[in-house]
Image (cartoon, rainbow, N blue to C red):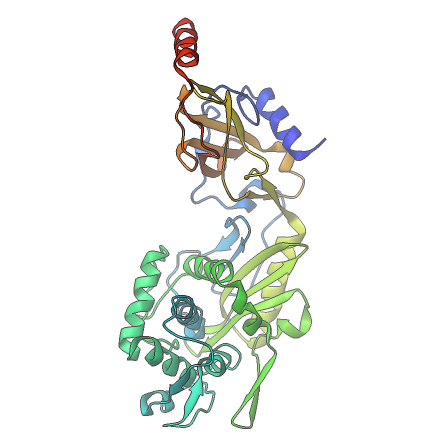
Length: 398
C-alpha cells in the first residue's frame, strides 16, 4: 500500500476524511497541537546521542524540521561559522549582479592586516572574487573575508550591517554580528537554532556554490592550505559546510551530508578539540540518517485535495502547493501520519491559480508536525448563466 493510500486510510480511521481527493472541508484532529518548538526526536523511542559539546542541533534540510537539539537557544560564539553568513551575503550580491566571480577586487591594508587565519593575500594586489571565496571558505581566511566585504559594501562595517539585516530577514532572532570573519567580541553571538536555519538557507538558495565547501584544499600565493573539515576525508557523503574555532568558542562545526537524495545538516559548537568536533558531528549525522525518514507528500503532480467548485466551468479544482511538501518522522512512523485539510467552503468560481484558500496539516500522535497553505492550482473561470443558477439552487438545498 502506498504512503498516500495509508495517509488517506488513517485520516478516515481517525474521523478526518475530506482529504486527498475528497470534497468536504475538515477540521484539525481534536486535541492536535502545533509543534513549532517540537523536535522529531520527541516522537521516537530512540534516545538522543550523548555528545561532548556545549550546544548542538541536527535538522533535515528537505523538510526544514529540527530532528534533535541540545541548548538550542543558548547564546554562543560563532567564531568562523560567521563566514556562512558572509558567504550568503556575497552569493546574494553575485545573484543580483553587483559582483561577479571573475571580478578583480583590490586588497586594502585593512583586509591585509586582519588577524587570525589567513589566505595570505598581498596588500594593494588584485584578487578575483572566485579566488577570495576559496580563501574564505576552504582556507577560512579572515583577510579574504574582509576583502570580499569591502567589495560588496564598500567597507566592512557596511557589510556587517548587511549581515545583520539578512539575519533579521531570515528570522535569526538570537544572532548579532560585529565583524565579518567571526573574530571574538562580547556582542558577536548566535545560537545553534539560528546557525541551522542559516546553513539550510545557504544550501537551498545557493546550491551552485556548494562545491566550494567540499573542496579539500586550495593553494594561493604558493601556500597550500587544507580544508579544516576533517569529515570531507572520512565520509564521501559529507559535502560541507564550515569549521570555526577560538579559545573562547571552542571547536565548532556545521556539517551537511547528502545520502540517497536526503540532506541533513548538523551544528555543533564548543567541542574540546578538532578531533572531537569531527567525531561528534559524524555521530550525529549517522544517528539522524539511521533513525529518521523524510517523505515527500503532495505538490503540483500530487494535489492534496480535489475540491468541489461551484458556479465554475470545472466541477473540481486541485488544491495543493507548487513545491512538494516534505515531512520528517521517526523511521517506521510515516504510515502513522494523519493528514488534515481545512479550506473555504463553498469554493465559488471564478478562482485564480495561486490563491490561498486554506491549510493542510500533517499530525503525528496528536501534534501538528507540518502545516502549509493550500493554494488553487489552476484557474477556474465562471460558468455561464444557466450553470451558475443551477449551482446556486443546489447550494440552497444543501
